[in-house]
Amino acid sequence: MRQWLRKLVQGLVLGALLALLFLYPQAAMQGVREGLSLWANAVLPALLPFFVLTSLLLEGGMLRLLAPLAAPLCRLFRIPREAGGVLLSGWLSGAPNGARLAASLAKRGELTGPEASRLLSAATVTSPLFLVGTVGQALGSPALGGLIYGIHLLAAICNGVLWRGRGAHAARAPHAAPPPASAALLHVLPEALRTSCLSALFIGGAIAVFSALSSVLTALGAVEALQRTLLFLLPPEAVPALLAGALEVSNGCQLAASCALSLPVRASMLCALCAFGGLSVFCQAQVFLDGLAPARTYLLGRLTHAGLSFALCRAVFLFFGSSLPTFAAQGAAASLAPANPLAVPALLLCLGFSLLPWRRLLRPR
Image 1 (tube, rainbow, N blue to C red):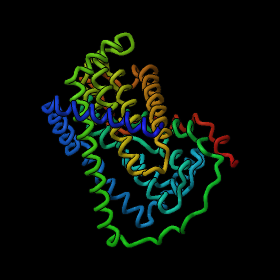
Image 2: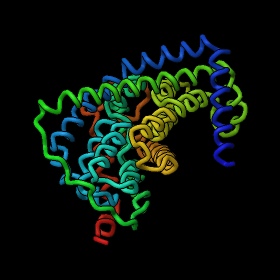
Image 3: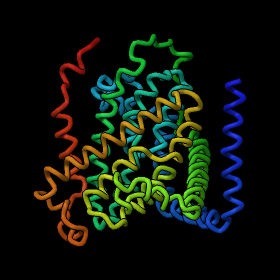
């Protein structure tokens, strides 16, 4: 009975969405065009090179060379040492590449479901190229994009600590098979290109679909309805960006960066939206994971990461906003930005690491 009711509800929802596409075809087509344009101009250049290179590193056995660098983090998050390279790769390449690499490790028998959940709670971040190049440019300075990435990454570390107890006492199954032998780069290059291009095309399709849905809801009047409903909770200017970002993060980031709000509020919204990732990234990750990690756990991890990112960004602007040139007004940000846009994020990461109770967390259990 419960399964029949679930199918009925799903059918009604999908039928309603299909009816909206017929009622607002122009808005749907415009959303698809905008989504594909954003994917081709911003998302694809930021993701595809990392997809190919990380696939080569994984299949060639070289990703294990990065594992010693992340050994303290692996103990902190209670994940296997073999996942250290995936953790660092996820931080550098952005979502959903971390889920894709975690699924590859699970197929090799090197990662279990609870370990994948703990890994993804810390490894799921937005691409630094997208934040520095696209979001930073929209804000007026790449340094601001680098700052948002640093806060976003620090929140991911805190989120990993928050979820480190998820399934930590479950018995770890033995490896199904020993890890495959390393292959020559020329032998794995065609397969890495094929899988990376297919993954990038799938991401583009997901962005287009959710962009169309966002445009249809806007044409339907959902934005105005939410503005009236949330009048005493959120500024009206923030509602369009939050609605678009809840569905597709790239569109939401563009709207949040250009909305008529103060820079601290826009930056905090961007941190939260990038941490959540939107339903588009959620669906992409679930396809890659293929049931490895529970969808509910993954979604809750995205919500906690979004809350931590928002709170950390607000705290940074509250305590350091008037003392660092990177936090200047948008018009002056480009001229006052430091020469190295990653200097402030590096400082924040060092501060975050120094505040963590390392000796207690890293003690063997």
